[in-house]
Each structure stands twice: as structure tokens, then as C-alpha cells.
Image (cartoon, rainbow, N blue to C red; front, side, top):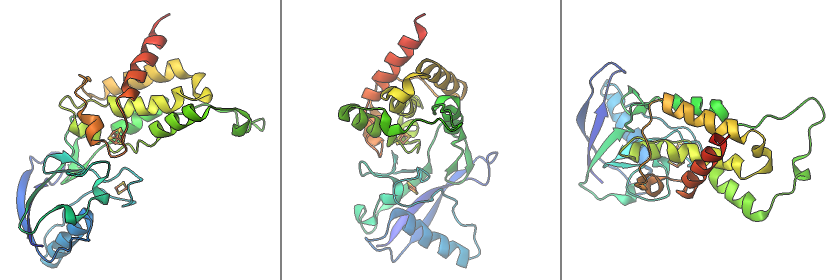
Length: 247
Ligand code: SF4
Ligand code: FES
């Protein structure tokens, strides 16, 4: 395939940035989207030009590092996959593809297609954990019986990889789907109940401090989430917050 790429180039956080046009050729339909970008970068390096900076790590849909807005959609046109799992067979010879970073005030661009998502880390630090006494009296996790349904629901929430596609997709740049998944995975398990009130209040407080917008129940986040995190998590987050706020 021969493709025209329009890619966001931005030297650093202070640079204004702009879309730059590139041509790539010899792209196989079996390549992943990131491999296609690798081909472009090899070409750029061979021409002594600056390669395009983009985030990636596992390239298996696990780590949450890849993060591109492709033709206006977070992680591209396919559903329930990350950018690293997107294959070039989704596109046609001669296509023009627009590639931009995830956009949100709380995800400032660092360089080209790489954004700073440490706001998510700070929300996690505010409450995305349980406190366990590790002084030698630690209880075996198997000693706490958990119903299959609760365990499955908690596992579904825990599949959030913190990629930020929900934020990039939301017209309000809301982080509610992410925060709701992180709160839910603990709220559904007995181990998480002990600190539940502080957790939900602290995580929501940090979310607001980071400058994410409010949720207006549009549901776009659920559609674009590569892990299928459902809006039910947001409903649970709201219930948890209400319970924590009632004295
Ligand atoms: S909720 Fe989905 S889209 Fe949002 S950070 Fe988690 S995995 Fe990514
Ligand atoms: S590179 Fe790890 S999820 Fe895409």
C-alpha cells in the first residue's frame, strides 16, 4: 500500500505544533499501525530528518502506552483494540490517514504524538491501592471467599490499562471512566471496602485538581475504550461517592 500521512509534529511542550504531510510506500496489510510508523521513521532517519516521536511499549494491548488519535478516533477505527493492535488491513491503498496525539488539557503534549499522562498516575496514587499489613501476619488472599459474579465484575473493571482513550474521546475531557474502573475494582471486593470512602473521595478530588472535565453521560468513552470498560462503572463510582459523602 502507498499512503499519505498527516501527522502532528511538535518539537516540545512550548512549540505551537502543526500537521505535516508524509508519503509512505510498500506498507503490507499484515503490518501493525505502529510498524507502519516504524517504516516512516526509518525513511526519515535515512534522510537525516527527525523521526516522529510516539508512545509504545508492549505492542500487545496490555501496557496502555500507545495512544494515537487516528482519523479522529482514539486507537483508530476498529473497536476493542489499542493502537498497537490495529492492523494496516483496516486501510486501503491510497488512503490519507490523520494521526494526532490524544488531546486534553490534563494530557499536555510533550513531543509530536507523545502526551504526558502522569495526571492518571497521581489519581492512582490518591487512592488506587489497598493497605495491607506485611509484618508477617498477612492473611492468605484465598482465605477471603468472594462470589464468582463479584470476582468477574472486579476483574472486568481491573482490565483498564490507563491508556486515556476515554479522556481523548470525551467532549468534556472527562476521566470518569478511568477513575470509575479504578474505584470499582476495589469497591467490588471485600479487601477494598475498608478504605472505600477515603479512596473515592481522594481520587475524585485529584481528578478535579488535574483539570479533567465533568461527565455528561454521552457514552463516547465506553464506545472507544479498548478494554470495554462499561458505563456501569461510572454509575457505581457515583453511588460510592454519594455513600462516602453522607455523614
Ligand atoms: S477506561 Fe478504557 S479508555 Fe479509559 S483509560 Fe481505561 S482502558 Fe483506557
Ligand atoms: S503498546 Fe502496550 S498497549 Fe499498545
